[in-house]
Image (cartoon, rainbow, N blue to C red; front, side, top):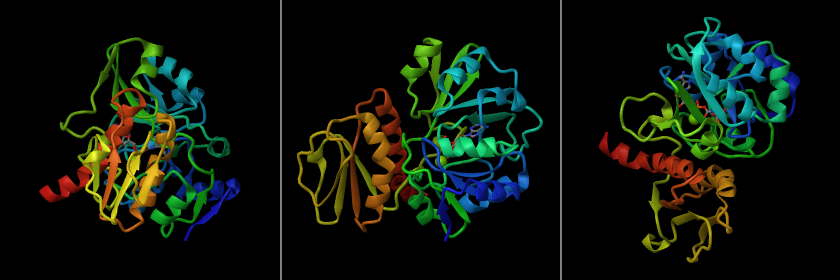
Length: 322
Ligand code: TXA
Ligand code: MG
């Protein structure tokens, strides 16, 4: 099993040897390696069992590093970076040659962000390279938001998990790209469309709702999925309750069930976001035959929560079809 510790020096040593290390961020835990070394990023793919066609997000230590790795940076990208970094916003920009094609799966665009977690920022400041880091789950499973989740999911395959406590936000970053004067949201995330609009105005397109060509893995038919069948409901009256069903809900829970997690009795979307993945992981370990999950109002962070839940629930449908 992996060691869970706060030992940054050990992480630096491993990363300098092109090894992988699990790191905390404010969104979810990442599985990190030297983004400029194909030998190192290769280990990320094998550890996660992730297809090499799925590119990696690069984590840099500050806004000033942008120019080192990207070119032709649109004005709006710079404005957004200055506004939201460190934080849960990932920008898709034209890469410079220093970024290997293997990090971007051959794309000329690199996804990058400055994560907001003191341990990981400290780590980045002790390295002379940026860190490629996808979420630290096996491909397709729920993203880990605690060091113990990483241990449980891939601890037998890695040496070190840097312990940064529970992730503050609990949902992945928002991924945006730039076309002409528009900002395009490719993956909804913790930063909402309204947050972006407040900074760059109304010119924002959304391209994640389709079943077209896969541009990012957020666009795959299923993702973030527990092994237990997940059923989304609008209302608790839809539940066919039995001793092996569980419910993840928020607000005033009207039903009494043995396996019930209320993510936020006050219906705070931020609180629900922070706890959603850890609650899904917890319920997935209970040996239930169905997890019911209540949908969120389709606005602000609720859009991101619903998108993740829909992808998670799609697994059953998808596996039945293929
Ligand atoms: O919050 C986050 O973004 C977390 C933490 C660890 O930073 N990371 C994360 O990484 O969610 P991952 O690999 O699980 O999701 C990254 C998404 C994938 O859907 C990938 O396809 C997309 O970003 N992506 C990365 N590079 C890309 C590129 N060059 N072009 C298009 N999509 C890209
Ligand atoms: Mg992921």
